[in-house]
Length: 113
Image (tube, rainbow, N blue to C red):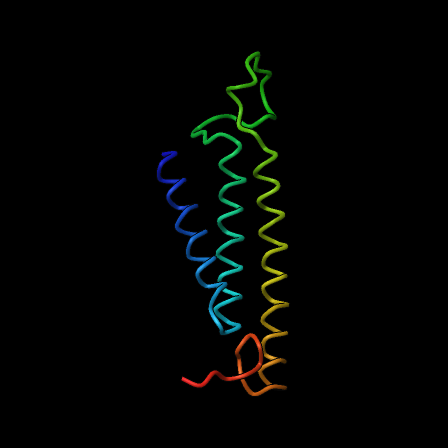
């Protein structure tokens, strides 16, 4: 299970960095979104991957290591909301820049091939 999560984090990070280095603004925005997904998955995995474990609330348990950690889950939930709002803002800025410059290149100029 840990290998699959580590590979998913690596693929998302690699794809996000590759898209960040592209010259078009939409690709940069998608790259930022992929990087945020990779960070969210990493934060979620720091809470120890537990399946069918009880949450902190409920019956008192003497061994705390048997409980699911709610802090990474709440951090990821908050990061998802902030990431969605940031992506929406970047898309609006991208559309405005496209209308003002007539191109969607990051530097605002078309490159000659």
